[in-house]
Image 1 (tube, helix red, strand yellow):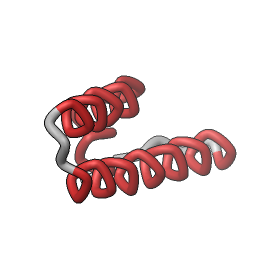
Image 2: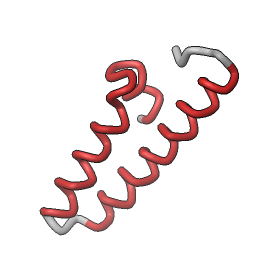
Image 3: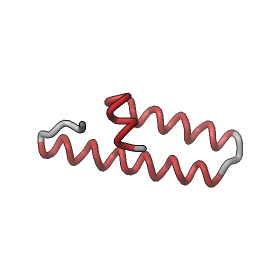
Image 4: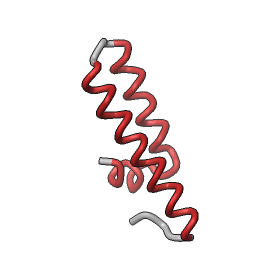
Length: 58
């Protein structure tokens, strides 16, 4: 999921996950919040490591 969001949304992928987290919090969906938090963490890691190595995520 994280990789797909980065490919489709680029640098906006983190914002997409934050909107999903906020929506799930508003709708009281704790399991979905945990899922999107994990996706956000994966996006952060992928973006950080790709920038450090000078690679693009494809």
